[in-house]
Every structure is written in structure tokens, then in C-alpha cells.
Length: 46
Image 1 (tube, rainbow, N blue to C red):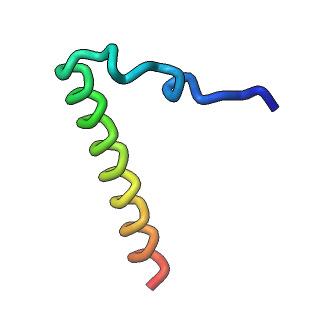
Image 2: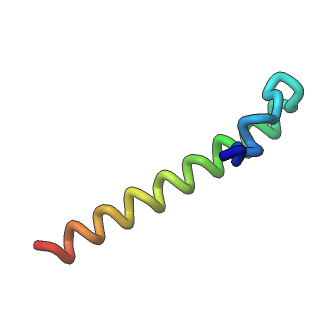
């Protein structure tokens, strides 16, 4: 039960702006890939 997300434990205040931008960019890529998969699955179902 003690599984915690390691990312949640990183104090964001200690990160440089450059690092925050990189994280945001990665999150955007992940979200885009997820959206693409959902779109493709919807196409296959039709």
C-alpha cells in the first residue's frame, strides 16, 4: 500500500525554469500520444 509516485515527492520549487519547461514538454507529448490513441481507437470502432 505504500507505493507512492516518486515524481510527486520532487519539490518543484527547487527545479530550474528550464527543467520545468522540459517536464511540461514531456507531459504535452504524452497527452498528445494518448489523444492520438483514443482517436485511432474511435476510428477502428466506427
